[in-house]
Image (cartoon, rainbow, N blue to C red; front, side, top):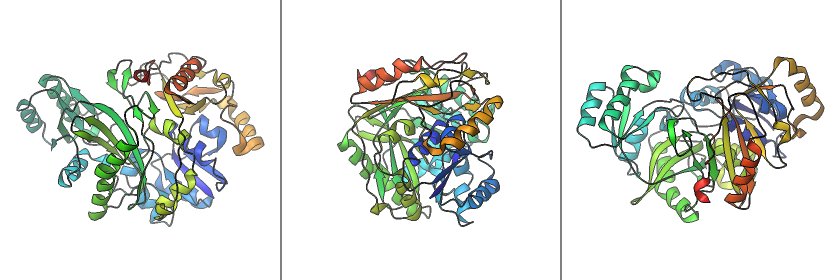
Length: 443
């Protein structure tokens, strides 16, 4: 089988890495990819919003399955576009992807179908939103309705903070059209957990749970980011809790979408909070989370291609999934200044010095132009057998805010965590930083 993976982040690198472990997979192309995916697959210089170019590449390369990684092309209807051209695609349609691309749609769906969530209302008028805030006690949560790279959520401790969040989103348009509507929710207390599930629109199979860290600094301080690290499994969220969330949240959501004419196929991600009243939904995503994918996929012992193809073709009931009991911890290395302004083009060193078994999933990386011929020679000589541990000792530079996710597995949270932090300082580039407290509460 031939596969095309669309995206350029560490999530996509992890997906490619896992797909290449399938004996059924012959070739993997990645568009546009990054330096890491270029070491194990073939990158295509096609942006994720070029639906015509991506579809043509899939046909030219006789691709059997297209896997959509990021949220934006899903929201823009890439699955509909490719499916209408006869391609088999892993991911939800534009209508189903509204569960992520419109928080007001998701909120309305949950409330109408009795799916436990934070109560709230949507507003497309800044003045109406402000009036509503002034009628409520703080804290409240203000969310930009659309996609905003994980940065459109404000937990407002005071009314003034909430009013300011509305101004930033709706009047200053910091998130563009994503902030034309805001959702204002009650603040819920509890531990946050992520539970992702594979679904073919009817059958729902949960993955192993994870916890991610959105704030940029230790102690959950600073602004929200796309995610600074994750681990799996989180404590106090075992099989019983997975079954409860599957029955009360994941399955009802998939059934509700199907009833309303928007069957969901792909990965449904539930961002949860464990309250005194039980688990409730904070947000849904319509794809693998990042960095959750980097700590969940290494625990998958089954064939990822089998699972994805079954989701896309409506036969998930025929696939068995097994998961490792090992713990997995991932820590993101970011560019100085992220999630604000940052500089790119910084040479990265140390990727070839990581201990055996430690993974480096690339996100904001690219190969220096002077090294392209060397990379092509590497691929030509070794193809998919090229190990992730055999990274170039030089010639890779930064090209984004979140640059790498360093991942380790172990029999306990302590051992997996220690191995990550023992290795992370081996990787260096100017201005790099990371959180030092990922999975720390499990000590």
